[in-house]
Image 1 (cartoon, rainbow, N blue to C red):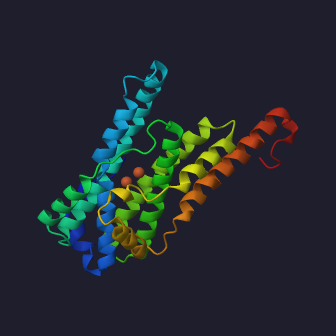
Image 2 (cartoon, rainbow, N blue to C red):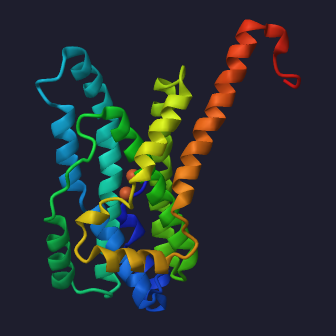
Image 3 (cartoon, rainbow, N blue to C red):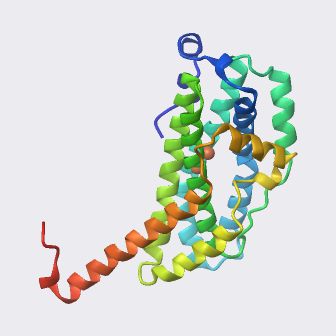
Length: 257
Ligand SMILES: [Fe+2]
Ligand SMILES: [Fe+2]
């Protein structure tokens, strides 16, 4: 938690820090696409709640899901400010008029979002982990590649949120696969195989929109998303491997304390 769109895009910041005229047309198109993607939140939150509160679930799963929802409500509160801060920025900077932006957002939001891993919870969480990591790396790259100080600040805050969401899902997956991280690595490969940028198939003219996303942030490399998650799993595997070795033969503990 810890920051609000109202502080980040207030009149003072718009006057002193913002340089919207420095954005190229492609960069502006990319910022709008990021906004449309983030603004699918109402759709995917209702999907998520539908899956997590299904009354047909076995009792023990129902209890676990209620625990998981404590995280979910904080998570979606952070996601909600991503669409909100960009919407406020685009309007207050005068880059887009209010009626135009609202019509665009309405059109994009209306495309239904269906969670692709309804019945396979683990694959669903791998997908979410990859999605969070992709947005983290993309916002970081876009912040680096454009020359607008206020937008850099906004994207850095958003990227930090995505990084912490990604870390949460990595941690969750690693803990529940502690005994068999190879199985997790196989699931990551399978999900990553047909992983795309979040909700891209829901965007109108998505080829054009994805092209602007990539052109606006040349330092973003999509394969890094998969590599990052695999590295984390590998690191965890060697850490747990060492721990179990220490457990069996305590004299083989680390040399340096
Ligand atoms: Fe987000
Ligand atoms: Fe996120």
